[in-house]
Length: 101
Image 1 (cartoon, rainbow, N blue to C red):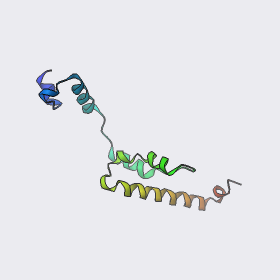
Image 2: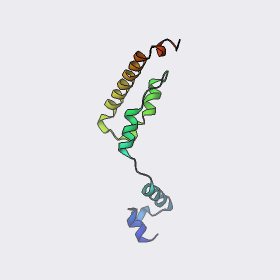
Image 3: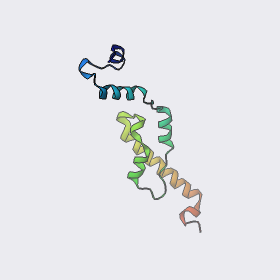
Image 4: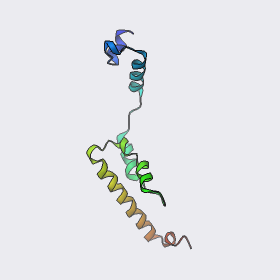
């Protein structure tokens, strides 16, 4: 393998295998996460009617947001915010509570 590839992809002399090169190549060209966008998606995500809490947490895709030590706190806040929004919505629209009748 040419020395420029070894240097560019930070391969050691014993790591000059096709598999390692291919993996480094994929990592190099992998798209970057738009952190602001992902966090905006996170805070705009609302729990759907009859959606299980665990399914909602999976929908949040919290790992993409890179919250670090605040991860559990942010999930908790989003669950509370979503439930408050849904209860406010049902209070403003009584037909939601009685099935639209």
